[in-house]
Image 1 (cartoon, one colour):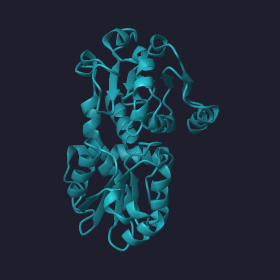
Image 2 (cartoon, helix red, strand yellow; image 1 turned 120 degrees about the horizontal axis):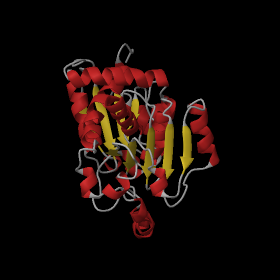
Image 3 (cartoon, helix red, strand yellow; image 1 turned 90 degrees about the horizontal axis):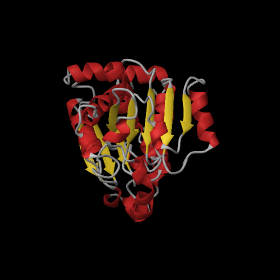
Image 4 (cartoon, rainbow, N blue to C red; image 1 turned 90 degrees about the vertical axis):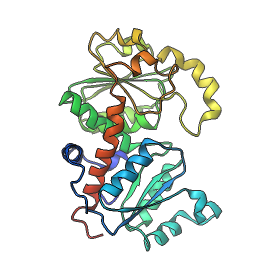
Length: 306
């Protein structure tokens, strides 16, 4: 792999398969690679709230033998105007990795460019690549292949962006986005076509009932992402037709599985009878964050001269 994992664009299809294989092994035996990063300190910078991402990374680092320093930008001199580049160069003298959850994708990219060791993107406004890898692994666990249709309903956000890129690299058969607006341009359509080598049928469907037809998986996320709460009232008024409920699930014609990266706003993007049903695999997704992130760290650190 590259030195860093800052984008879903940073990983090849072969490397994704290596993550899957490692994740399965680590899931069976969490003691594998227990000394991989012993005597190494990883800095976690979290500028946004987090349950699954922060705790799964914290536990994963400890299980791989590392130490954690947990901060947010306001505790660093970045909060008082020091450049990201100078911060990265300084932290390179102290620690062996950075995991960062912040607002701007450019912040993560600049850190990675100027930090000596691996930098992992734990979420920005633009991407959530660790979530995407975990979701793809969860799909692979359930189906064993990607000859599937996934329909994503609601807001085309950072989760959707990263997930669609990863699934296109795995040549999923069909990706459908359904929401009140298309929310992606021709360049992104061409990107998916190029990445999948023309194997993925990617399209927008305004009508949610048509969008879920024959779907193997229905995925949704909160309608308003962190940092965009000022748009909540306006966005939610347009989103209710895209709520995933039992009526919509019944239209697929299949035993469709339901996915959500969590946290969920129950009664908004998803109804209780769906998220609590046997079709819901949301907690499998949550568990797999630990295993896939450990697998990523193994690939980033194993046999490297760090």
